[in-house]
Image (cartoon, rainbow, N blue to C red):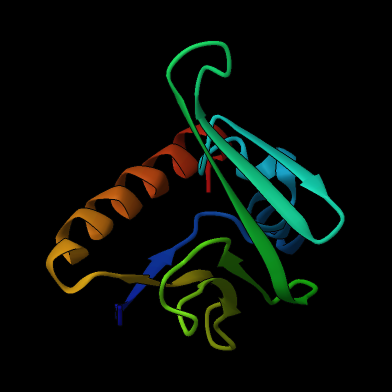
Length: 132
C-alpha cells in the first residue's frame, strides 16, 4: 500500500548544534520526545510507548542513513510501503544562524491529519523537555 509523504518544518530555539543533534539522533534524546523509551541495538532502534509491564506498543526501525549533525533516516520494520521512511534533518540558516528541524514522514492517504497532529504533539514535547 502506497503512502503519502508529509513534510514539517519546525524552527528550533537553540543555536547549539550538538544539543539539537543529540535530541534527534540518540536513544536518550529521542526518549524525551518521540517515545517513552528508546533503545539501540546495533543499527536498530526500539521505540516503546506506554508502560512495558502493561499496555504498550513497541516498534523497531533501522537506521538507514546517518549524516552526523545533519540528518537521520529510519525505516520501520514491517512497513507495507518499502519507499516509506522517517527522516529528521537539521538545517542552519546562513543569514540568521537559526536552526530548523525538517521532518519527512509517510502516512496512509486517509491518516495524514492524524500524523500531522502526532508530530505537533511530539514537537511540543521536544520544546518542553529540551527547550528546543
